Length: 199
Image 1 (tube, rainbow, N blue to C red):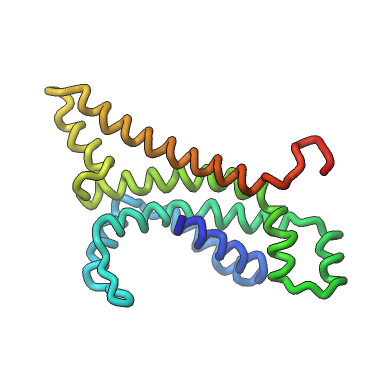
Image 2: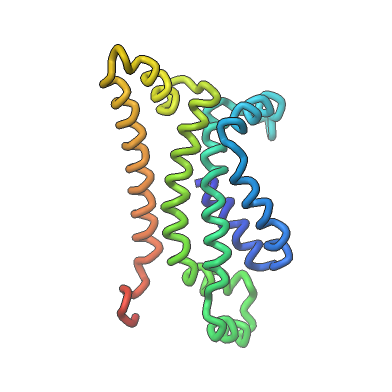
């Protein structure tokens, strides 16, 4: 959820100010090339020194942040494209009513962006699961599914079915995230006309 919110906020800012989009977009792309398995231990080492508002970072918090780190990128990129996809005639109509940009964002640009946001949500959900699993393996988080996959994999020669237990857990987690995206899609598209039909 954190990655989705951050991605949408960045998308709104970049859609509003083209200069910020041109400045930030290359860095957003570069951020996704950082190897997560190397970034996780670095973030853990920082978390021991940083205590914003008295909050202490635990290992599970690090895994959650890295999952959000992978989730925000597709939301930001698709969000910018979707927010700019609103018909120019509709934007001119809002301008003629002296509507603010933020009013246009809520009334026009966000609804127009839904066809772009739904696929991005699906990708963000998959990325978040992968990010958390890799983080758990990298930082040695106990009882995490990623850590179980690594531990059970080492015991595969003596107890092969054990590995499938962890894999099944990861699959269930992925299906749960997919179900949340489907629910979000139903909520976002409940007032939209079906494809090929007029409202």
